[in-house]
Image (cartoon, rainbow, N blue to C red):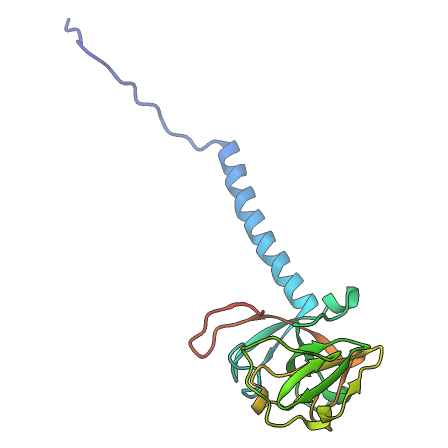
Amino acid sequence: MRRNKGLSFYEKKKRISLHLVKEAFGMVFGTFAAVFLAAVLVFSVGMKTNVIGVSMEPTLYNGQQILINRFGYKLASPQRGDVIVFLPNGNQNSHFYIKRVVALPGEKVQIIDGQLYVNGIPEENETYDKMEDAGIAENQITLESDEYFVLGDNRNISEDSRSGNIGPVNKDTIYGQAWFHMSGEGKGMGFIQ
């Protein structure tokens, strides 16, 4: 009789345990449920549209897809700097306009020598070009309790609150906040600032 000297290993038969199957199924189900819930949430409070024109460059580009948060302004009001989506004068036959809020209800707005003034204080943002056309804001405008003054980021190529056919934007015509942009024009996806 021969004895094995040294270590000996016993091979254990591998069996799939019921616990392991349940855990794997739970992880897969949880992942699918989270993705489904996120999709339902985004598409129930959000909406997708395309940017039309170059008035919001360099923030947003012509043809770029954006998601709109339709729910946020039911709980709060737009704030200065928000990029909003609205129908000019509530015109259902128009395309959505996408502009940045620069003045809030009750504030006084005027454009003097291409510079935006809100309540007599000049805007201190060096990002924007001097405006060639003051439009209706050549004379001081006092916004009503439900009105917002909006401008495009590409101010010299923007039809916005300076235009007589748009003017100050009434809160009732605001569809929501531009929230997230898809890739386009060589830009990646991301939140809109």
